[in-house]
Image (cartoon, rainbow, N blue to C red; front, side, top):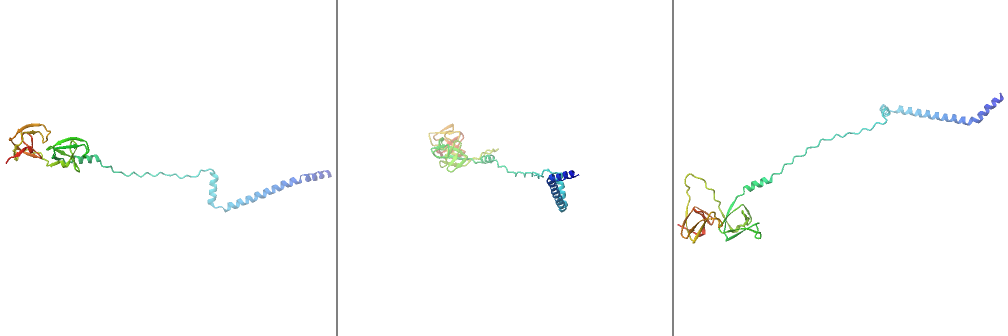
Length: 233
């Protein structure tokens, strides 16, 4: 009996400190658990219904991705209509077609026709006194003819002769009589000293002119140079 009591007392003496440590630790753990549980209940009691629903949703979808707003593209505005530029070539052609042709007679012995409207430009042709030229353009003191540019002050403007209208009866044309005052007068196909010769007249012969154009007159055989004729009464 005494030995048994001695063993019990010895057991408690040896293991009392570890036993007390375990009991103390368990007691501390229990106190912490109770305090934490009480605080959680208090927090749950203070939460509103909306917060509880939010917590439940978070528990159900812990990794739900955040919502990203989708941008709907707006339709592009239509481009404004740009008016087409006018066709300058057509306007240029129409203006060119309406250019009025002017007639001039050369009033100098030799008229140089040049490539450009300048006295230093290359010579492209020559005209003699009395020749008739057609000008399609006037630029300052120069006129544009078929061969190039002619100096305007060396030309005499002529009135354009309208084309004759056909009539049933013989037209009443005023005829002017001239006498040849040179040894031989060349009658030419056109009012130009370079035109082909169609006939010849000798001094004293009388010719009848139906048209006067600058320094030239129109007779039956062609054109005669006016300064080589003497008008008759």
